Amino acid sequence: MNIATLHYYFPTKEALIRGVVGHAMGRFRTILTPGTRPGELLAAQFQGVRRLATDEPELFVVMGELALRAGRDPAIAAIFRDTIQAWHDSLVGLVHHAQNDGNVDARLNPDAIASLVIATLSGLFMVPAANAASNRVDTALRQLESFLGLNG
Image (cartoon, rainbow, N blue to C red; front, side, top):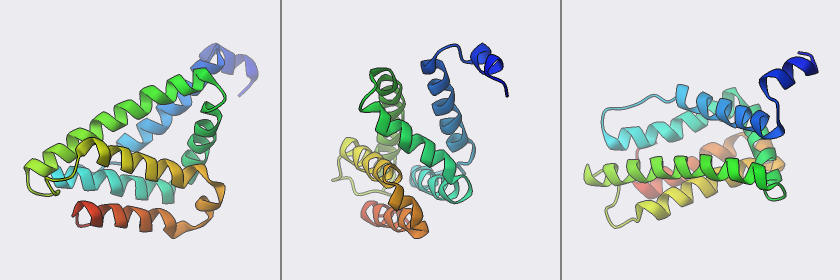
């Protein structure tokens, strides 16, 4: 693709970054295998991350790089803040519904659990050395599933 075409579709750096983040989030949404019960929907989130980490690791490398850059760039930080907030809100709802259905311990705080999941996954992909350990993502997700009481 030539630079003129890139600028036509993405006239600013922020537009390009929104496009990249939107593509990554779209990929994540398309690979989810939804269940019928709230606990299955929550488990599908973890399974989707596993599949993407294996099949499309470059998405996580790019998102990790952008997340690191967000600490130095307010425009990128704002894009990430919106994306993370939407993900957080979705996870809070899934955890809350899974608790009501008896799949997740009702004593756990859904807001804190959503933050823990996001921090764990974000941390795994922001450190390049972590990307080299192919089983690290699966191991971390299994620990989260065990903590939540899900069969992962």
